[in-house]
Length: 290
Image (cartoon, rainbow, N blue to C red; front, top):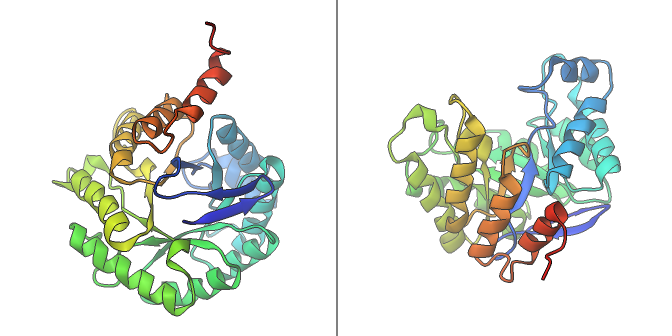
């Protein structure tokens, strides 16, 4: 099982563990333009505040993305990662294709163990990123596409083939299978691709049963292009959890997100006694009166 570390301690997740919720909002894309203005000026206050709000809503960790042509990513990715970690103490995810920026951020986050997303099978991507992942003993997410096709594979077998290739290359760099999280690929429902939801669900199950990998989905893709997109995001998330979803990139502002995830973790025996569900209920409503 992958294990992340931070000032708050160790966090292990995977099959049988509670679903890990990753705040995907500390990013430059789709945000208030002031976020970019601050980053260009060398500041990260707004990103820290976005991460802080996500943690208050129940996110377990924060994923940071500052990739933009006008932003010095090598300088700002480590600055943002450290600032958010210092403010919240939670594990940090790093979303970048820039190996120099990744190395700078992982160096700045030492001695803690971070999450790197997402490395695909495209030529040159793994060769650039995986030596850095190995050097800093990070957990890495694999995006199963790019080796055999530049398009998203639209079959379980296609995604398994891409995933096996990523695992093989990771092993060649000395990265253990337990430190690789495989993305099942969440597609926008608005694209109306027949069978897309079912393929993703079956892929998650196959990653567990055939590859022994922990799993991930970028849930924010599900509702893209639709009204009230987070309602579709939540429906997708809850549908995926019984099929083997271990972690999800989410918008923590999604209505009823945390209580719904806690409830599904209880039903799927990731929280077999309902302890986490009850803890959340009591925090919101006070102690149960007998």
